[in-house]
Length: 333
Ligand SMILES: NC(=O)c1ccc[n+]([C@@H]2O[C@H](COP(=O)([O-])OP(=O)(O)OC[C@H]3O[C@@H](n4cnc5c(N)ncnc54)[C@H](OP(=O)(O)O)[C@@H]3O)[C@@H](O)[C@H]2O)c1
Image (cartoon, rainbow, N blue to C red; front, side, top):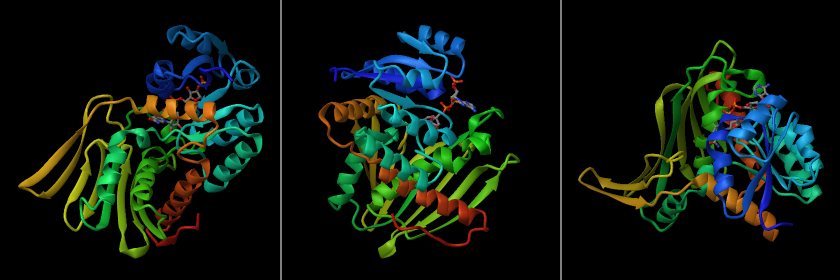
C-alpha cells in the first residue's frame, strides 16, 4: 500500500466536482488518480478540468485499473448497491454517497460483501466529521442541557430543475432519501439508540417521490425526535436538542461550509451562549479518516452495518407516509 490512497471517482456528479474531489486533492493521505463516466468524452473533459490523471468511459474500466485503491461512488441512490458490490468484488475500498442503499437489506449485503473481501466500506455522511457534532454530543452527555427529552431536525431546500435525479423515483429520489436521511441519522446519533416507532406525513410529487415529509420518531424512555425535510422549501438545515435546563441548537448542522460555525445553548431568551467552532472542511476530514483507516487497518468510525439502521427507519417512515401517518414499528437493528 502506498502512503497516498489512490482514489477512483465513479461518475462526474456535481457533488464529486464541488466538494469531494477538492477534498481528496487537499487531503494529506489521498490523491485522485482517475474518474469514470458513462460517457468517455465527459470523463475526459471532467478529468482535464479537475487535473485528474486518467479518465475512463465506463465504471467497469476504472474498477479494472490495478493502480486504484479506493473508489468514491457518487451515483444516483438506486445505483449505490450494484456499484459498491462491483467495486468490492474488484478489491477496492469504497466510500459511497448517502444514503448507502435503497433499503436496509441492501446495506447489510454490501457490508457483508466488504467484510468477506477484506475492504473498507463507509457511507459518506460527511456532517458527522464536523467538530460541531462531537462538541454538541459532549455538551449534552455532560449534562449541559439537563435531561434530553425532545429533538428536532430540519433539512430543506428548493429544487428548481425538473430533470434532477432527486425527482426520479426509479433513481431513488425523494426528500426523505435526499435530505431527510440526514435528519434520521442525526436524531439516531443524538438519541444514542434506535427509535421503536415512527409516523410520517408526506406531500407527493407527480413523479411519485415525496417532495416534502414531516416525521416523528419515538424512542424508548419517552424521548421523541421530529423532523421535516423538503425539496420545495427555502433552505434550512438545523438541529435542536431540547433538555429540561436548556436548548442546544446547531443553526447549520449539515453543510456549515468551511467558515466558523456555532453551537448555541439557550437557557432562556435573556441567557444564551454561542460556542464558536473554527471552520474546517468536513469532506476533507471524512476523506482523511477513511484513508487513514485503510492505511492502518482500523475499522472506520461509522460502519456500513450502522447505515442499515438509518435505512430501517427510512423504510418505516415511507410505510407510515403511504398510510396517512399510521404508526409503524421500526425493525430491530
Ligand atoms: N454528501 C453530500 O454533501 C451530498 C451532496 C449532494 C449529493 N449527494 C449524494 O451524491 C449522489 C449524487 O448526487 P448529485 O446531486 O451529485 O448527482 P448528479 O450531479 O445528478 O450526478 C449523478 C451522476 O451519476 C451518473 N449517472 C449514472 N447513471 C445515471 C442515471 N441513470 N441518471 C443520472 N445520472 C446517472 C452521472 O455521471 P456520468 O454520466 O458521468 O456517468 C451523473 O453525473 C447521490 O447519492 C446524492 O444523495 C451527497
